[in-house]
Image (tube, rainbow, N blue to C red; front, side):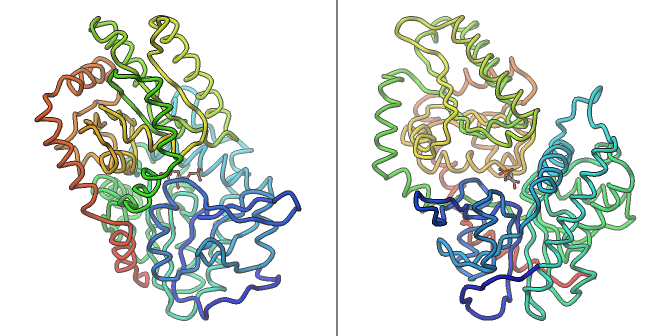
Amino acid sequence: VGSGVRMPTTGPVTLAVASNRGPVSFDRDQSGALVARRAGGGLASILGPGVEKHGALWLASAVSDADRAAAKAGIVDAEGFRLRYLVTGADQYRMYYDAIANGTLWFLHHGLWDLPRQPLFDRPWWAAWDAYVKVNHTFAAVIADEVADGGTVLVQDYHLSLVCGELARLRPDLRTAFFAHTPFCSPAELRLVPDEVAQLILSGLAAAGACGFHTARWASAFDACCEERLGRVPTTFVSPAAPDGADVARVAGSDACAKELRHLDSQVGDRRLIARVDRIELSKNLFRGFAAFDDLLEQRAPLRGEVVFAALEYPSREGLAEYRAYRRDVESAVKAINDKWATAEWTPIILDTTDNYARSVAALRRYDVLLVNPVRDGLNLVAKEGPLVNERDGVVALSRGAGVWDEIGDHAIEVHPFDVVGTSDALGTALDLSARDRSIRSAALRRAAVSRTPIDWFDEVLAAARTPD
Ligand code: G6P
């Protein structure tokens, strides 16, 4: 590791962040030259401003072939970031990312397993686990190699659960913090994975100087798991992430967004709009949201023809069979509801699966009700971004399974994520609120959304980092 031509850098690395997905992805232009593009996704927008402010080195996995080619140059400067991409063989990457990070740990922390069938720890699974351990150790070795004496490392998310443990061994001088952007499983859920695996994950995390979470709920779950398995509770801290208000406002004010809003307006007309914006993701609970809308139309005839549900859902993690199947099932559920209710003038559900950020932001500007009903979510940034740009005193119907519930639940309409009739009632209540109620709630949501910035979040994580015990 570490060979290759280096771009000029700005001196020793005293601060590094590590995440699986980096803030920039590379591509080839027509002449075959590498071009850098800012990657989408929540993590880049949460971390980006703090990384830029502090000039931190960002270590991430090379995901595409173009990323792998760019990684050959060692540390590169691109899109305002100082980056180092780690190369993993394609098969090993699939085992680490698809089978373990997304196929196992994501399901574990979000409570998504269909227990009669999953999880299933067979021999291919154990081979994948070995790959996961190796990739985590490679991350730790590269960090150990790059970061100067007494430097600080901020490790992000479940892909890298074992990095702080290995770093404590290789470089006990470093100050470290681990931050989980997901929920954390309960002790009972953790008992579903083999003891050796549970032990390695918890001891890997507990070896960080401190472990951070978006809400006290996930920190307590982590504490309870550590208490049960390790017999001690490591240092934790709670720091909810914040939207990048300037960036969201820039997109909302762009020509591209204005064009998307005109298009949406031509579809919705003067009807009311329920919107949702997510990845096509099992934890986002798309089915029960559509089933609730179907129930609402069933129960309240006057709403037929008068309300449109726009679902802006971009594909995600399609390397996993579960995600591909979920997408197909979502598409057929929407088709069934549209076939049942549509008229010549009205399509009840607009399902858009293109990855078009300007279009998503246009829907956030226009919604009357924003439905955010995940079964469980580390935070859910959309619930804070929506109120920042919404122009209609829109209401947020929010699942109490989302971490952000703890911050803004008082100003939202509560959704029990598994209760379809309850969700239908919540949508009805949200549509019925008086103009005065809507304006009080949306003002409170806006205040909550601007009360913190990504820099506040980053500086809190930085302040929490310390040398491990
Ligand atoms: C979501 C989660 C993050 C996670 C990211 C990875 O944004 O909230 O915790 O790091 O997904 O997504 P990816 O597309 O890289 O699998």
